[in-house]
Length: 361
Image (cartoon, rainbow, N blue to C red; front, side, top):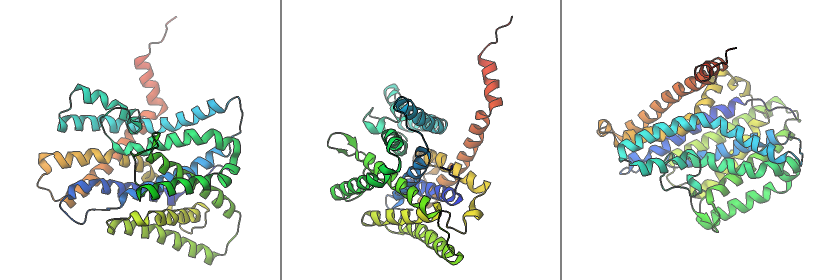
């Protein structure tokens, strides 16, 4: 199976949906107003889960199954995923801890308890201090992938064809029938796991199903007029979703329809049937994609600063929202530059020379 190339359309929408989530979490500035920014912005997380499932399938389906090494292979896969998040989570945690401790007058007990957030265990019931609540997405995604990896490696696309649809139907059906929404994170179902895990499980499996479908479509040749039509459809679907979460206050009854719209759009532009794919597949768009993770992790820090900081009390809610997002983007750009520099092999070698003394003969 060929290695999946980066998709500029996915890269662009990752950035845009990260911005949507940042605006959504500024809604606490609008407590006395009827029209906050992106009142349904939480639905943007669904895009990230589905895309994660898509690339999870692309990676896992090409792995060879070995009964002797499957445990080690699973751990290696999850460890690699965690390592890709660690620098960004650590920076967000340190800055968030400083801000929270300052504005909320945290003592030693709360500071120590906040450590469970850094370990991605808070949303599984560890500790009593909530910090960087958006880490639930990463925690639940890693758990679901940890569970699915050995099974999908062994059974390949047979699992996705036969079991994934059942998982999607049962999980989403349970959430919607029980709570009337998929946006439940911390309710514990049957004394086992948070409901957010079911949300992650369902949508990662949707992403895997989309991968199989788009892989089949890639082998079909279509006329140019069809490519133009599908390109327009996919973008209209995503723009419609954007407008819905921007203007409609309560989107609970539209959640499953939005998931369907997201899935159709993703099938179209992951099967390379979009005429704008080449245009958007460039370094600028790829850099915007890199910004999506730090924007997602860091924006709540600036929400707290603008909400509690005396300097910003006279600012209007709209001004606070815009400042939050702009400052988060600038901070994220700087963060990426620093992390990239540190991760450079030359820099790592310099640090090693400072810390580790060489034996002289």
